[in-house]
Image (cartoon, rainbow, N blue to C red):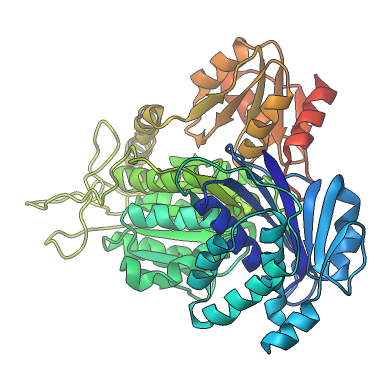
Length: 546
């Protein structure tokens, strides 16, 4: 069973909130739901819509053809009616025009309830539930929780819409308990908290901003601090300062803000103060297309910063992975006194995924602080390259410097110390490579002699596409730095055909694979219209290049 529902309307009219309520209700009933959000970069106005794919089996992507359209205005019908399936229908106010419309007299219902016009969304939501043959009681429970101050009026509006239409189709009963319904950005924030986050620093920049909002709303509940400094340069340097003092912090930004942070990334490389950055990519260059999605920042994340120093770049593929990979990034940054970048995009960050459960994480994040006794060398040379970390207030002189230095942190410019400290820092790379071998840097899904390679948010569409492709399996690369070269090379060498799928114009992961393994990937399915892949996009693309 699979239903695809589009809900659309003018910005500010509640299509996103209505979609979230619908998705949360259905996941609680036991269905799997994927919720895709599409909106323009406007302060007010413009057309917003959400696409929800609902199934009795796991789903990880959306579609561009719809079983039902819930239209909050005429523009929604005009734009999307062409993608309505042959037996599909539209739920809309009786004043709107379209084919196969289930008309709801919103004006009369609003008048009878003496309610504001904005309650029309709840009326249409109730009508949708009735059309699907679903019980009003399930919807009412979610509405009461989401709108506690207006629960009575909201529920009455939805019930009036429910009673105003007839059942149009039947949703099969599903077995199993309610599921998690969570966005990638919520998962990033939750993973940071689970890893021991003390302070989150960020300046608003779509599509990373929802993490700032989410954590700000949870400060008391999670006992954390959320700070919005004056710009991204202040953000990253404040994070380094707080980490130097012993806090566990994370910063969040997108491409333009990350560009401003680059000098501080190199400061991290020399000072070895832990730093964790959530980089939510958007189509670029420059301002680009701020509220849409591409994977164009891959090489930027890998190479940003002047000089040679170790880093981690990890790219989750869905919301569950975003939770765990954020924990891993904080764990690795603190343990190895390194830079960790969690690389995602708008599609992963602002889409909602549903999962049955979350298991225990594979790492145990901590501050990794030493018990200070006696003389302390802030940069003591060790075989692993990692100096035990102390913080001010323990009795030691704890130095952090941007200048080349000796073990105590005193400035040195002679050749011997330059070589010794560079070797010390780079020695961490081998330790990081060994560590991530236990963190599933590469995952393979499905079976077949042919191989699709992807990373990040393309995971969902590729997995959903496997059922429509004959003889293909999918290799997801989650750790970009350190790169799992041997695992990737092994999968490529045992494949007959290899296809790269990436939301970019040049296929940057293919370049990294060539650099790290010597294997050139000639067949590429690339999408760079600022929209994410659907499963059908993947199927069509692979069939074209095979």
